[in-house]
Image 1 (tube, rainbow, N blue to C red):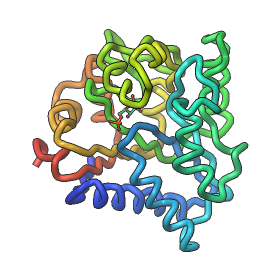
Image 2 (cartoon, rainbow, N blue to C red; image 1 turned 90 degrees about the vertical axis):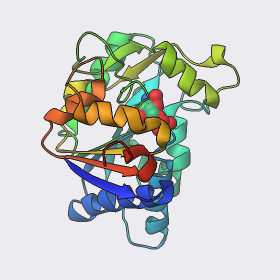
Image 3 (cartoon, rainbow, N blue to C red; image 1 turned 180 degrees about the vertical axis):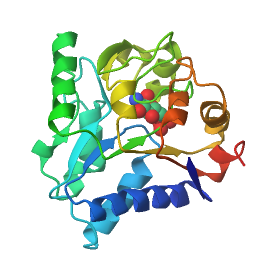
Image 4 (cartoon, rainbow, N blue to C red; image 1 turned 135 degrees about the vertical axis):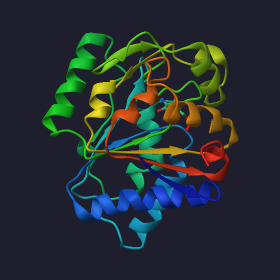
Amino acid sequence: MKIYMGEDYKGMSRKAANIISAQIILKPDCVLGLATGSTPIGTYDQLVNWYEKGDLDFSKVVTINLDEYKGLSGDNDQSYRYFMNKHLFDRINIYKENTYVPNGLEADSKKACQEYNDIITKCGGIDMQLLGLGHNGHIGFNEPGGAFEKETHCVNLTKSTIEANKRFFEKEEDVPRQAYTMGIKSIMQAKKILVVVSGEDKADIVKEAFTGPVTPEVPASVLQLHNDVTLVGDRAALSKML
Ligand code: GLP
């Protein structure tokens, strides 16, 4: 695993954006696996900035997002589709039809998940998967549990995730209880993985995930088994790794 440190959130975001830019420049029609959460926002801002300067072209890029809340439409400002449009897709020259997010409005979980697995296969897999890290070690919405779930599945969000994500909603009751998420197998099949972490509150889980035992109780720990993982963090998040 390669580890790169930025002094602060901005520095970390710039390094992560550099790695994604290199991927796009080397393979203009690459498939990027993308993530939501507050950590990648700075990375997306930096990519938009380089796009505006004429350094990046997204016209052939395909994106596949990790997850979406079940029950939310893309117009809902708490949905991950809305997040991606706002922070990235509406600001660059990507074709919306080349951007995939699980269909939160599909009530039939089996169908929603099968459709998403088919999309991943049809796109030929993921060249580079961007990941944030939940406080409990979740990646996408693969929550801690007894086994690694392989493909896209519907999850019941844990109390700690609902708690962590309630800051984006008016009240805690508004946080959806379920989500569709790409599975561990799909994530692990990405050719390259880029994990972004920021802040002191992530320091313990970063250490546990990348140096502790590989266990479904800490879903991100499985990344230790991937042969091309890059971890980019700010000093605070990496403090226990140094
Ligand atoms: C959410 C997302 C994850 C994300 C995590 C951490 O639950 N489903 O993909 O990595 O939150 O978010 P943050 O970056 O805001 O800490």
